[in-house]
Image 1 (cartoon, rainbow, N blue to C red):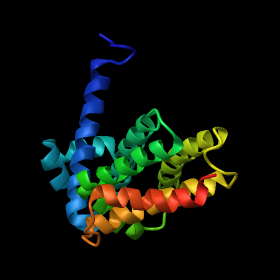
Image 2 (cartoon, rainbow, N blue to C red):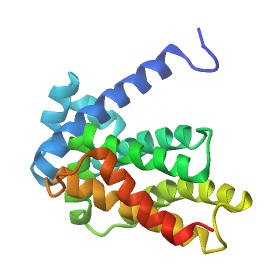
Image 3 (spheres, helix red, strand yellow):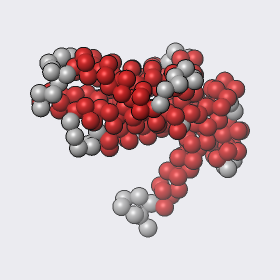
Image 4 (cartoon, helix red, strand yellow):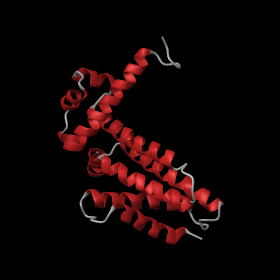
Amino acid sequence: MPVLGRTKKDVLSEFRKSELLIAARAVFGKKGFHDASIEEIAEMAEVAKGTVYLYYKSKKDLYLEALRFGIGSLVKELKARADTPGSCLDVLRVLTHTKIVFFEENRDFFRIYYSELGKLPAHPAGISLVRDLYAEQAQVFERVLREGMKRREVRNLDIEKTAYAIADLTRGIATQRLLGMSKTRLEDDVEFILNVIWKGIAR
């Protein structure tokens, strides 16, 4: 029987895809795109190799979808945190903390996102995916900044460029931490980011 418009088959298909993406993220994160195999991913997901090809036409399709799945999880969490009560500075602190913690808790995904993404063959689908994922993160920061401007907490500036700059800065600090280049506490790195940002945008 359909449940809220979804059949049992739909639910099972969604579950299998989710399990495949989780397994793919782990295998790609450990071995990279070129050395990972569909067989390993299928084994980790506890499905037959043929089942993978029921959902994804190629290893690259699965790789791109694993990236989308991972960033989608981050964006979903950022959107939820963006509704945290408080000033613009308070919300930016929460979002910065959330993003850095996400990458520290998902190191396998981090390896895909930073180490391997640039090695993907130049392909319209890959380029479009990178652009879309980058934009989705920045748009969360942009929404918070626009609200801050309305409340006169943030001065008049190019909100879109500022949002992308914040997204890049948080990514840079997250990278330093995961590569062992930052020895400071998480809270100190978050405050460093906020100090750099807020001195440039506050009224």
